[in-house]
Length: 79
Length: 359
Image (cartoon, rainbow over all chains, first blue to last red):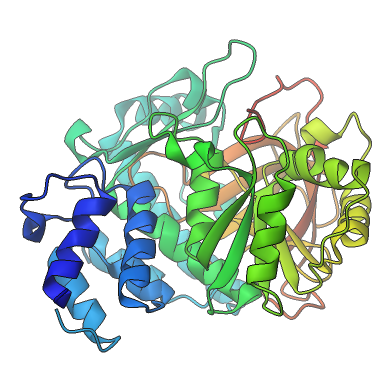
């Protein structure tokens, strides 16, 4: 699966969204599912999907879909 | 400076390396700013402060910063932000029909909670994320409608982990198989254990002892908080707790922490010498329970807590119902600067307040 698809899929599955949800607009607290509980789930799923371990600062700063793409670059993952 | 810039510069403070004179200046500056901000933004707070302190004297030292009793959060809705800015409401579970405290969080406050917590705890754990065994059940974090101090604690500490497992089932019984599987998966690694003092005592330690089960956790670090009041009847103190934990699990590093749900994030961690430590972003003062005058080092009294975190509610300077005493400032043998202290229990006449250590 291409990385972009994988990345989107993690958001969809983490927040139980419909398959055609507009994930690119998602941000922390923009939907009820992406709260502090959902955040740790999202991080765990991303780490599993891309086989990485993020630094604490990156977890804290992972505030929306777009920021996440930049963050993953640090771990040699191109979306 | 805007609130946002101020928050950024506050986060640059070194967690445990700011001498008393510098801290007094910086923390006082934040206390003045927050007091003035909440006076304008939260009318019920303003009216309480005006009643208790009128006229407000100059805040020349931390002792002059007006404090409010922590139980005020139970009786009154204290918010300093418009409803639309509230992203989370935290509650401390009220006991026997009492109303719980309600704490309203906005984005700035919620972000500060996590960032300050990370800086404090990193001083004890390092910055590497560890496998974490939570001594609680998964349901505690799964239920979004009940966001308690326990939920906040587990979630807050999840950031220090990269692989989380829960030691207890939903009925709070110990799941031996799951623990063993987790431990064999992470054999030879440092492991973080986290939970609430009473739950660790009752549902973990006593259960291990009853089953005569020894866990291979020599490389574990246990961090626990939430209060000792439920253990008072069982006459367990910190030393015995550590002793028995170490016998049943081999864990040598046990850190209690002290804090209020009203000041989530800026916790006071127990150091290697057994004292609770104020980080740069928080401090305590001890006050006489009768006339509320500040007491010197070594004298027991009510614990007043200051924290730079609360922006969305006026919880930056509160008087608790806990009794404690300051052991010293800046000169602990663990080499961390700041106030270090001990908590002795709670004021006898105070109503028993359910905090995070109730179901």
